[in-house]
Length: 190
Image (tube, rainbow, N blue to C red; front, side):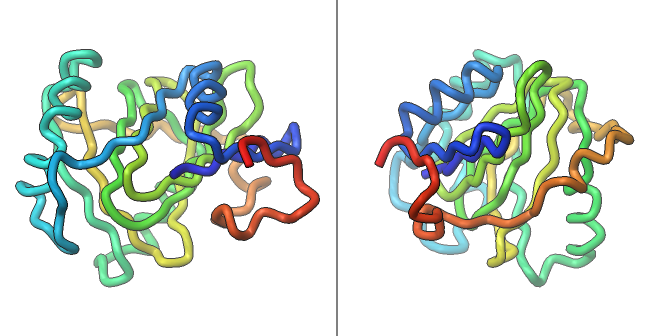
């Protein structure tokens, strides 16, 4: 399940309902999605898309998405460091960014208009939709692995438009997980 940190408020959320409600106030959609059937480790993209077909089809209808694929990033991915350097700079897209996390972990920092930056640590089973034109950046967690279904509104995919705010430099690309929350922090949903 996702873990959401709001550094400006010193808050951390881990309850699924509370996470979904808070992110909705920022225009971000979050839900927990489980496959229709069990998937073996390393399942091929076609099997993953079939397992999540109901959720993918519902999102396509709701958001006007026309295609879906599976991205598989791991320590053996050629050009991984260059790819991560692009992902980890603040940017926005002219279409939504939708991810169903299948395996691994990642950290979205999202900077909604008129809201503080929110750190959303995602893991298998999490679905996140960051609306078009919302500033954000992404880092992998220490396992340097993530596998996710991506949905697109344009067959050619999305183009990142980078900002020059430097805001991404003020936040650590560190995933902590629930077990690493400091005992004195204000954690909701325990």
